Length: 223
Image 1: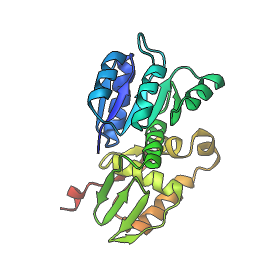
Image 2 (image 1 turned 135 degrees about the vertical axis):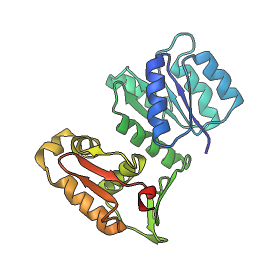
Image 3 (image 1 turned 180 degrees about the horizontal axis):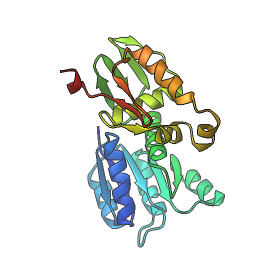
């Protein structure tokens, strides 16, 4: 897997994006200079580039024009959020357009979607006899396919990325379903957890933390 290049002249944003994607399992390189980014793009190959639009000197549009002939996917990550800005970015050839401020979970989902469409950046998660291949959204248990709904799949990935950590119910609701649905159906999460436990044979591996949330145990807990 090649790294993801993050280009944003706001250092705090560049660090946040790098940390978010690194925690999700993606190797990343972040720079705050568009001139340095241009040099890196000439010297290296990347699975994906995240570009801020408004940067001094060489802006994101200029970098995208340089990037397009290489076939490297690109996502604009910018505060320019009007409809005309989004349409312009997509018409220029960007694969997606994310407006700041953004939710980390949405950023990861958008990145995975672009990488999947481009046939790049496949991650594989393994837990006991379950294997998840993100490029194909394929889940197997002991080598046999497991049929998951889209929400079950998203929930599984969130648990896998945070193994050993307690995930609060409100965080799970908001990340997977959004605030509106969270308020409308308070049993949705519990139902999906029960289905995951049954389909994956994880009855004692997805732990309920009373009045807090859920935790996917680490394999060390079995030893």
